Image 1 (cartoon, rainbow, N blue to C red):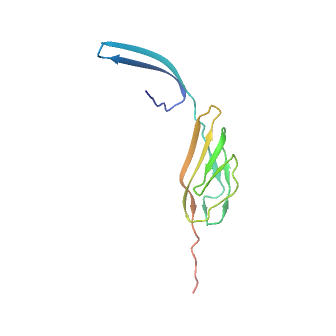
Image 2 (tube, rainbow, N blue to C red):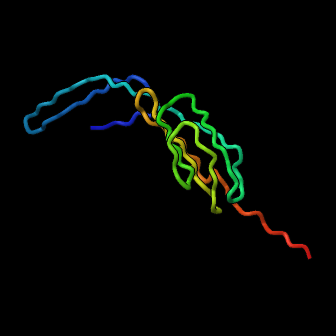
Image 3 (cartoon, helix red, strand yellow):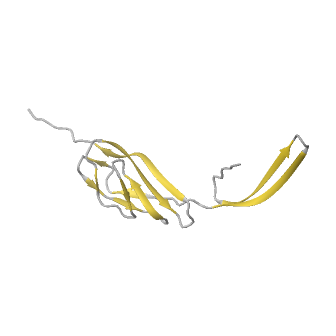
Length: 125
């Protein structure tokens, strides 16, 4: 048996079990508490950069422990990451995962968040 709850809160669950071979059924009711997920959040000083340009991510999460960052080129564990340097061109997905004080894990993922591209070469003739 499983269920999915989209919001934190207290719920009453009723389960009915039936055995048709003996025309018998049983009903059981119990309480379920769904705890809230932490909501990790972050900012970065530059979203569009050239390769080898350092960028600094800032953790703006209001709660959480055990932070795990994924910058698209590697991961870092810790609340405050060091400057990140993207060495290759591309569009990078960045995510931050944290565990709340209730043990629940939340993740924020921004697809194609970092845009790393070379400057175009200008030639004058």
